[in-house]
Structures are given as structure tokens and as C-alpha cells.
Amino acid sequence: MRQQRLGPRRAVSHSLAAAGMRWRAAPVGSVVELLITLLTGATPVLTAWLLKLLLDDLTSGRASRERVLALAAALGATGVVGLVLPHVTRYLDAEITRRVTRLVRQRLFTAVNRLTGIGRLEDPRFHDRLQLAQQTGHMGPSELSGGLMRMAAGLVAVGGFATSLLLLHPLVALLVVAAAGPGLWAELRLSRARAATFLRMEQRERRERFYTHLVTGVEAAKEVRLFGLGGFFTGRMLAELDAANAEHRGLDRRQLRAQSLVGLLGAAVAGLAIWSAVAAAFDGRITAGGVALVLAAIPGVQGGLGSLVGQAGRMHQALLFFDHYRVATGQPPDLPLAGSPVPVAALSEGIVFHDVWFRYGDNHPWVLRGVDLTLPAGRSVGLVGLNGAGKSTMVKLLCRFYDPTKGRITWDGVDLRDLDPAALRARLGAVFQDHTAYDLTATENIGVADLPALSDPARIAAAARDAGLHDAIAALPRGYDTLLSRIFFDADDLAADGDPDTGAGVVLSGGQWQRMAVARGFLRADRDLLILDEPSNGLDAEAEHDLHVRLMRMREGRSSLLISHRLSAVRSADVIVVLAEGRVAEEGDHAALMAAGGGYARLFSLQARGYASPAAT
Image (cartoon, rainbow, N blue to C red; front, side, top):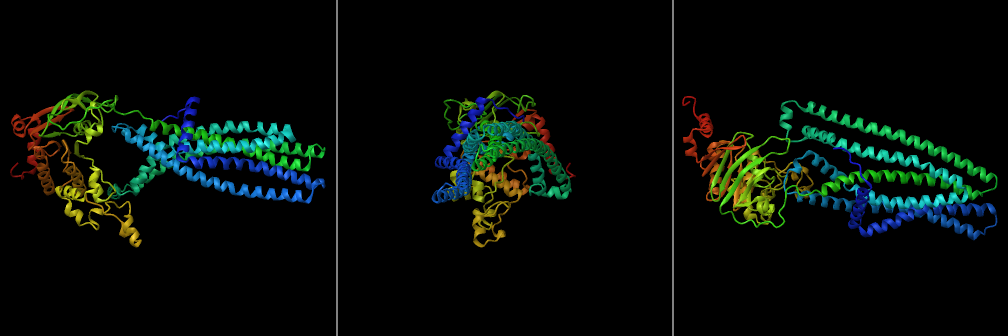
């Protein structure tokens, strides 16, 4: 992803948006922080003037004891304030940043949840931008708004010291202020380079995390150990890390050169200014207190200007990062939404694919090529085909995760595009081939299919019982409340005796997780269309037979779509559809397709021979 340069209008828009978010996250805290920050900026100037007055009174010999002691007390009080205020400011800034971060995350994930389909989430460019928005989105409100307040405080300090220098020695003031120009120019260039480096490193660091997870994670542990891949993936991880370090090292060296040159210029100006002030005092043009004020004002102006320059650089960098957040949260709908969606009625006629073509992008091959297919209401349809035929893509289109590139899909004659996607999906039940194993409790792993069921243990248990999983769950340490994960600890068990082993969760077998996905399907068995995508994948023969008997009972009299490579599993379907190279190649019931002697009959006979004895073949 290429670094985007922001125009003035976009920069102002981002700044106002960031300030608004900070204000909404912590309105009272923002006002208090602003007041304290301004007071913090004025404190060094006040301290320098009090010191000047005190020194002038002590050297003149004409001031009263009471005045000198009052100045000393005021100087001490100012010092105490100067020591305490930064700590208060840090506390307020940390609290406001926490609130801003929460607001940023809330808005970001709300924007992601507004995406109707899954196409953008499968786009690596959008994924990179989303990751950057998640990692750096809070920097906009924190750095831009907080930076503006810190810059206001810096301007108070710089303004006070610069005014003091102008009153005492105008030439010194001009020299010190002019010396800040190169520093500002260098810092802005460095901030742009840091932001660009961060962007380039996102892909590399993501690959580093990927290889790290392969070495340390559970999912690939068996193959990594068996194939001896630990050193291989470690080498890949270190190569990515070395490349990232080299990039960061180059930036650090560039920063070192620039800041060293700016620092040398500042030191030369400071030396010249001090020499000029001492010469003026020797000639009697300023007092000893004036010299002290100049000595305090020179580093005050230089330090303040340096802080302003650094803050400007950080704000510029934050502005560049905030752009990713605003782009991510301002994404238009990924699928067109009907302005006045048609209500989704109970399926009474059927779902029809009308000359449906689909591909995942303009530079991708066609997955579906003119599919015409009817899923009749109240009947079961079996969908078979070789890998890559387009079966799973049809499931994505049925759920409206994508829209057809050409053609249309209708629900009782209504185009799916004219329906509300959430209302459509509420009428679907599904068991996906790539189902998710959630690091949640057994109850939650089933209940995610229909969230209201989480408060209905009877429904959860019934779904598990229908899927043949109830006995296995009941035998777990805490039954349905058992955490099905070894990644997290169960907080309740861990708190009871403090033993991590007690709070560790339980990991199900692959077959049990498959039944867990089927239990989710049973929880939505009353929906208008049940989609079963390889529901028995990974089960042994006995478990597969048992599950298909259960699913057959559930599908009886209901609209369903069963996808399976096992043709014996779909032979009982009312209609069997054979998909080949993105087209419907055959359609009919089992008997008709076998009698036709086409591809279905060939594959069915091939699978059947695999179960026959050698003598029989």
C-alpha cells in the first residue's frame, strides 16, 4: 500500500474529526487538561521572571527583606507547581487516551460490522488498512488533539521567553527563533518517512507474526514436529525480522544525522546568544538578573521550539495514520442495499438461480458460468461436483456474502438484492465446511447460531442431543459451561484455587467439533432453508452414518441444500445437481442420474467399488 499524501482540506477535516472524538470521549477531562497544560507552559516563564527580580533586588541592595522573602516564596511555590503539574497532565492524558481508544475501537468495529458481505475482508489491501486503523486509530484523537494542547502550552512558554528576549536583547531573540526553521523542516520529513516505513512494514511484520504462530501455535504443531519445520519457519521469521530491522535502522540513522545537524546549529546559536548577553552585561546594558533571564530564556525558547517541532512531526505522522482509520470507518457499502427492502416472506415457491455468473475479481477466472438452478420449497437438493466446481461459491451467493457478477438469484421471485441481508440470513440455517471452533464454552459454541438461545439451556441441550453431542458435553468437567479452549483460562475455576491447571479448558476432537457445527445447524432447523456444506467431513464411517440419519430426519419436509463429496449421502435427496466447471451438468433424482449413465453414475460407481471387496471388483 502506497503512502498517501494529505491535502490541506483533508488534513483539516481529519484534525476536526480527531478533536471531536476526543471531546466526545472525555469533555470534562479535555477542558481540565487544556487549563493545566496552559498553566504548565506559563510556569517556566514565571519562574524565570521571579528569578530575575530576585537577583536584581539582591544585587541592588535597595530591596526590603519582606520583598526578597516574598519573591523567594513565590519562586518556591512556582517550582512546586512546575513539578506537580506534569504528573497530573500525564494522568489525565492517559485516562483520556483510554477513553478515546475505546471510542475508536467501537466505531471501527461498528463500521466493519456494517459491511454486508465478506469480499472486503478477503481483500489483503483492505485488511492491511484495517490492521493499521486498529493499531494506530487512537493516535489521531490522542496526538492531534492532545498535541494541539501541548503546542498551545509550548507557544505560551516560547512566547513568554521570546518576548522576554526581545525586551532584553532583540538580536538574540531573532537568532534563536530563526534557528528553529531547519528543525521543523527536518522533523516533518522524518515524520513522513516514519509513517511510510510503518506502512511498508505492516505486510512484513504480519508475515513475521504468521511464522511465529506456526512455530508456537497448536494448530500446526503436529506437522511442524513431524516434518521438522521448526528451524525452517524460524529462519523465515528471522529473515522477515532482519529485513524489518534493516528498514528501521536506516530510518534511525537518517534521524540521527538530521537531529545531530539541527542540534549543532542550535548549540552554535545558543553559544553566540550567551556570548552576546554576557558582553551586554559587561557593558552595563542589562543587569545580572537580566543575564539570568537570558540564560533561562535561551534554552527555554530552544527547548520550546524543539518541542513544538517534535510535536508538529508527531501530529503530522498521526494525521497520516488517522487517514487509514477514517478510510476504514468511512467505507461505502460493499454490496448495494435496497432503499426500501422487500419484506422476506416465508419461502413458499423456491430459490432460483437465473443465468448466474460469478468471479471474485476482474482479474480472476469465472467460478460460475451461467448457472440455472431451482431449489424448490419444501424439498431437499443435493449438490455434488469435483473440487473447484463452484459449490461453496454458490453457498456464499445464497447467503448473500457476494452478489452475482451477472444474472440474479430470486427468493419466491424477489431478487436477493431487493431484500434486507440481515432479514434474509435470519431465515437461513447453515453448517459450513470451514466451520469455526470458538474459544468459548460449550453452551456459547452452540448458542452463537441463535443468540437468544444462550438464555435457554433446554434449546441448547436439545440441539446438542440432536447432533449426537449431548453425552460428550455432559461428561466435561463443567458440562455445558466448560471452556472449549486451551488458549484461555476459565476465570471462575482459576479464581477458586489459583491453580492454572484447574482453570484450563478442554479441547474437543475433530469429530466432536464437526458435531458442534451440526448442533448449530439444528438450533436453526426451523428456518426456511438449511444449507449443509460437507456436514460429515472428518467423521468415521459409523459416526458419518449416524449423523446422516439424524440430518435426514431434520431435512424431511424442509427446504435444504446438501453438499457432499460422498454421493451416498445425497442419493436420498429429491433433486441431485451435478456441478462441473461452474455449470449445471446434470440434474435429477438418483435413479434418473444412474440410468443416464453420465458423470454422476460414473462417480457413484467409482465410490461404490471402493467399498467393495477385491473379489467383488
